[in-house]
Length: 96
Image 1 (cartoon, helix red, strand yellow):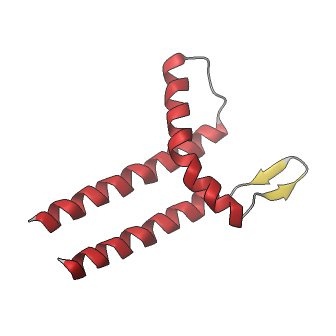
Image 2: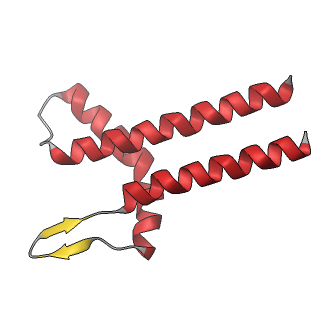
Image 3: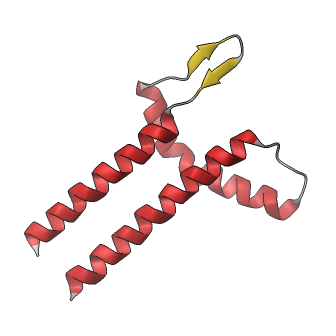
């Protein structure tokens, strides 16, 4: 029973982080309005996702020139999150 709840909790955590990365990508396409609530949510999403994305950017920098660049770190982050989730699930299934 413990294993089931642990796997559900991990799955939920990875799902939430996945959606925070997607929201951050969408936020990068729109200007940040002066709305205090929206700005607070924007800062929250940025601060939660930036450590993981900046780690990825160390190895895969932004591609482009002339002031226009493509950041592949969110795409790589989603793939890495899925790999890490599967690895953790496998380890938990072996251990329990």
